[in-house]
Image 1: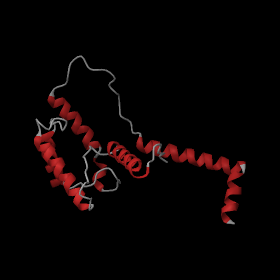
Image 2 (image 1 turned 180 degrees about the vertical axis):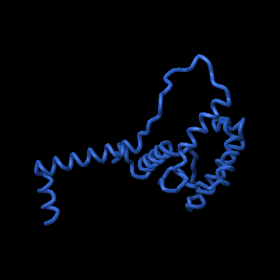
Image 3 (image 1 turned 45 degrees about the horizontal axis):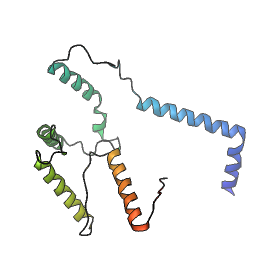
Image 4 (image 1 turned 135 degrees about the horizontal axis):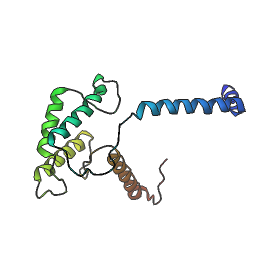
Length: 166
């Protein structure tokens, strides 16, 4: 009965208009929270490059303005703010920043690290002997790879030829 009454109330022009206004207010509030002023945006390559010191100074300024995540109140952005882990990650990044996993002949250690991480994940999730995996940089790429794996598995296991994602 309550659902029926709510549905009927939402159908009235007054309530529907109020809902539309409230949604617009929430959308504007979220946009103000997310879209911060970036200052002037450089739209073309400068005639002369900046010195290393200028680049580092700019990066430091940006980073110092983005330290709000350290309070631990931002979900899904930084999973560990521990300083010792940050130092380890920085050193690992320094050592491998220019390494290219597309060339395992030149960077065999990357292939070994990937193989070990995949093997650990397979064991952790009790994968069958034919289990396999790969690594990605995370985010959207990982989601797309998971969708592709699900699509391929459905094609093999159930003959799904035209899957739909909802």
